[in-house]
Amino acid sequence: MRYAFFIALLFLAGCGTAPSRIDNACAIFAQRDGLFNNWAREAKRASREYGVPVPVLMATIYTESGFRAYARPKRIYLLGFIPWKRPSSAYGYAQALDGTWAAYQRETGRWAASRTDFGDAIKFVGWYHNKSNRRNGIALTDTYRLYLAYYAGHAGYERGKFTSAIRAAAQRSAGIADRYERQLHSCGY
Image (cartoon, rainbow, N blue to C red; front, top):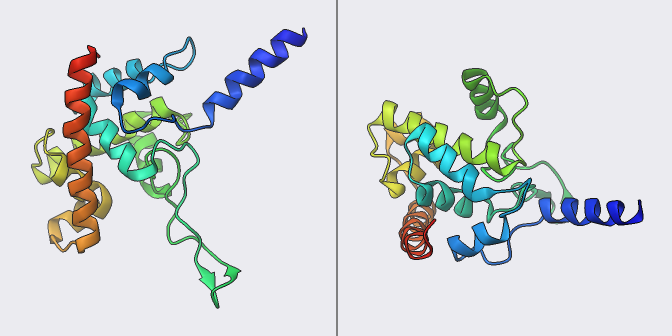
């Protein structure tokens, strides 16, 4: 009985923490390759379902949350020291907004999907990028433009006005996707 408690505790402790080596896609998948927690399998499923390559999906999550399940935007502080609201409702691995997550659940029928579950979050990213492809004509391999649409929203992407910070994040995401693609090819995922 005592051993079951410790095994359950170790399992739960591993679920809420980000992988330690997020710069290497092979290391991420190796760290999260367990009986109940197989990120490579979830990423491949999302890729097959939505047609978005695994490196693009993973780069988006890297850029959004650094693979932290409970990531949120930093709070705004009044007078520099009084904690106030957050600038948005973004939450979880994919930093999905409340309304966009609700639309995902409604359109896919995945009512129990959670933003803190990697499998659900990576499917959300695939769903959103697929919508960007259909609505905005962005190639599913164009990480830079997919990220711009992901960050700014579909209507924001259509307006085409992006700050230098958003462009830099999109460029970083594209670079990460390129690196992840090389790494995943070398380790056979």
